[in-house]
Length: 116
Image (tube, rainbow, N blue to C red; front, side, top):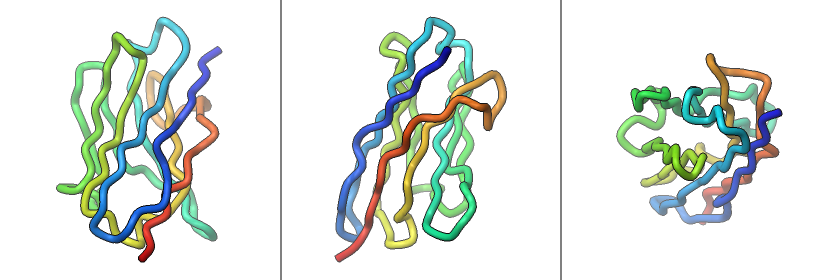
């Protein structure tokens, strides 16, 4: 059973930065793709970024050039560096892992609020 624990969310002013982390249990982490999704109030959950086991990345158009996804297989951890944050980035951010995404393995989410 894969367990995911996200951290790093918080309140930040527009233009600020945050770094999210997601630690996964299970030795199969290095073979799986990882992703970050987000869900704003009243909206559907949407893809933010993904990274394959080989390190290939993919981003939503809305975050390209501002967010960077990375992973450390030795630490079973995936990161999301978020720069130049905007109010529309406000959402609960979820980590996801699996052979293909989205899978059924979700973390509990971490709240990101961008507001002055």
